[in-house]
Image (cartoon, rainbow, N blue to C red):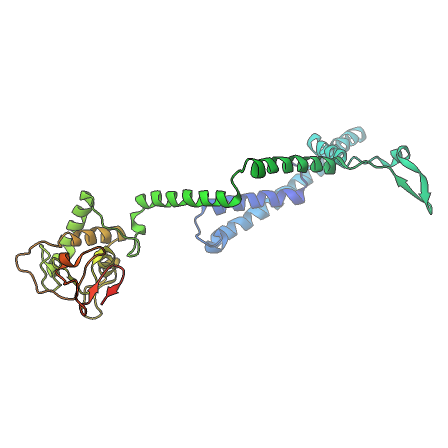
Length: 318
């Protein structure tokens, strides 16, 4: 490594490699590790000092070794030290070939006969890098023309729509394993037996004291009728459980105690009380709630009613 990189380049490379490794290993959140953890900064400073010291010691040892050599050995040492590595030489040769220029001592071979006020002109060929890039651009243009204008390949807009569709599928798959991402705007009624059993357990532990085991209501409202104080439907029930009831006299906000997935489970279980007959039903409270696509006959509301107010999942109908 010392043969390829000078010390002024070696020290920063090694130091930043160690710093990057420390940043990767140490969890420091949004801040750099050496800021979040001052000891890391001290460690990196110590590493930097050690690297500089090592370079100084190695340089001093090289000098001592050089002074102990005879003149012939010194000459060989200097020649070996100044020898260009094969890799570096290959890069230099490739660079010169890409330019395609003639050495100064060979310019007489391409000089033109005429001159302008003593200014002579060289008949240089186009640099290979430019020429090959031009050929590559022609090939690219031909392929592009055939793909998108002859064979009607997918445009950028088509690819974008495909990526949107793939992303949507990926999000839905992720949601299946990340149930706690749900909120009152995205929640849906859970019908799986395991979810309803979990909801029943949560209800029994936290809700029976106010709503009774059969949902008939006590301190809290009756959950079996079609009247809701803060709106029915899974979204409203989820929001009520999560955020709490009416200020000062309603249910507490359970979002501090229950996960979103658990709130979805208990909200879905609460909706299973609809249409059941509790032992001692509490008098209905709130407004009549009907879901969309429910006919007047199903709710007992006359078709020609004009003043009745009916709450739905999406709007209020007068």
